[in-house]
Image 1 (cartoon, rainbow, N blue to C red):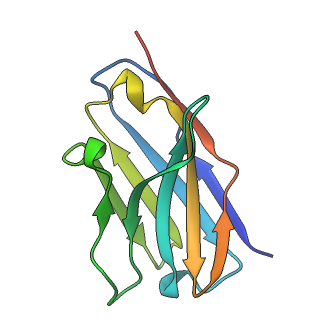
Image 2: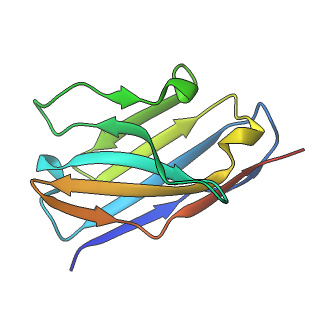
Length: 117
């Protein structure tokens, strides 16, 4: 059974930091491209960052998060992370972890990130 379970969301003040984690199971994690998406209220889900499987393409970051967010993965632990710094109110959204193994897509349930003073 495929599972992606996100954690680490919460309420943070502008300028603060959070680290999101995603635990994966049920598929060949090391061969999957992993991504973080987010969806703000009333907006479409958007790609935030992507990290390829070993030997694949380079990482991708949405322009609005470049220099502030860092995606990483630990294949031994089957984990993917999103380190978020210098958070802004416009980063408020539900953040989702996605795995792409060949043509199969897997999604987590999401974790809420709220940036507010």
